Amino acid sequence: MRILVASAVLVSLVLSAGAQEYGRGALNADRETSGLGRAPLPAANHDGFASGGAWGLKLGLGWANVDWDLGPAGGSESLFAPQASLFYKATDNLDVNFSMLVLSAEDKDDQLGSTEADMSRLALGLRYWINTQSRITPYVGGGLGYYLLDGKTDNTRENGSVVPATVSVKDAPGAFLEGGAAFQVSDTFFINADLTYDFLLGSADATINGDDEDFDVKSLSFNLGVTWMF
Image (cartoon, rainbow, N blue to C red; front, top):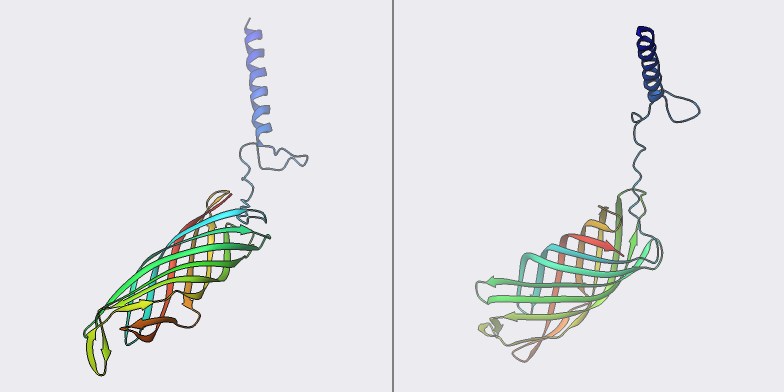
């Protein structure tokens, strides 16, 4: 009986030692030192680059610095400005997009009172994506659009005097430039940061108290947002 028990114990020890030794070996023909469950994971290779044929929606909120001139009046303000872009990747590197931006700025002048500038962008653009074979994908782009405009000033100058103002501003063509980078969080979700610069192609036509004037507005915005690919 003792011989059977001793034999069983010996067999158990041999099998245990063999199993431990097997666990130290690699799962390949070379039997290298890295073992089962102990070998390092393969290096992550996250390619956040979306190929051609993908649709995307890019939403952002920017901190915009807006400057404008309306006849003798003008102003400057920093404010939050939302942006949105629906795009289609026509090739692996190039997308075609329709974008929107909305902002409404206000400033005060000691003599002319409150001045305001409203600008909404409706634009078609192109964006070039740079494949870095990593989670980070830089991009640059720009576009042309139609800018919905409005401007106001409480007062204006006529013949050296300050008088109340009645203002009318026409819409005008404009353009924008952008550059930034997207960071891949999941297969279809990205966080992005970029700069956009919006400006008019020339000045918009305006009238103040029936007299022809020019209205000019531009915006430089730092934006944070998200992008979905689908």
